[in-house]
Image (tube, rainbow, N blue to C red; front, side):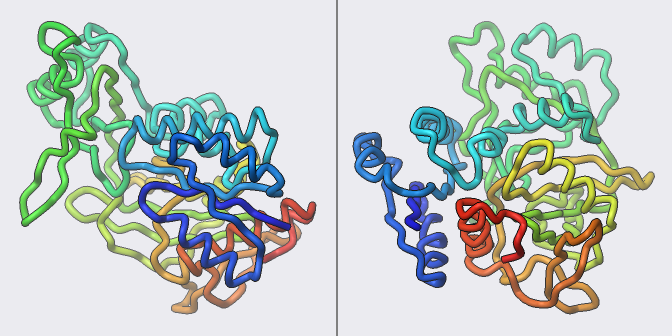
Length: 334
């Protein structure tokens, strides 16, 4: 068994290298970000499968990366982990909203505008506040709760242009540096506008499924946002949410997925995000009665197993699952 580890520009792939070293698995690291990437893939086409950590800072770079994965997955017919299909939803809120809608999963109603006049008409009659988001962005970046028509119009003019789309500056994300919010024009949203219905939430649940392993915890609020707050509630996740995430992954044939789910103040659940690759900084992603562990799905129930299973940013668990998939034993616990 030999795995190919596809690089990104930000060295995230090194966690996969450490995982393969830990498991004593033969691997080769392949630079997918170089101009002769195709020659390198063809030279290493004997790999049983390729492990992927796509880029996420800039949408154009992400799109080029996904285009290259299309060739590996669809032309060369090589297995990817995560799959090409789930990576098509990664840092792509527009595509994610389509997937959730066509499969009738509970989600926050989302509007995607390509026409400025359609956006103008919407903001004239919609109920405020609304949430305007960039297509790409994690940890609450590119998300704004908009309370007035005037503010919505200002953002709309940045995205579509005041007079013509030829001179669009775009609506940039803001990142905190030296204690102040600085616009990051390299990530500015242009020509397409994504607007969501506002939900008043108590907190957000993060439910993770990797293979047959389930984890869950709360992401608590900080200044109206759960994403990026860094505040964690180690509460037992409701079974209904574990079932929901299992259904999402079965429907999409997803291998690795973190599903962020709003719990509103009127006790409803709405899927907010699907991320096949996600931040995982602790060696555990769930604690039950202060004991780290995971749930394994067995015979229609979730069985708690004590331990730390999220080493190397959960990459070790992904590699173990990928090896079982390649060996034809996907449901055996890692």
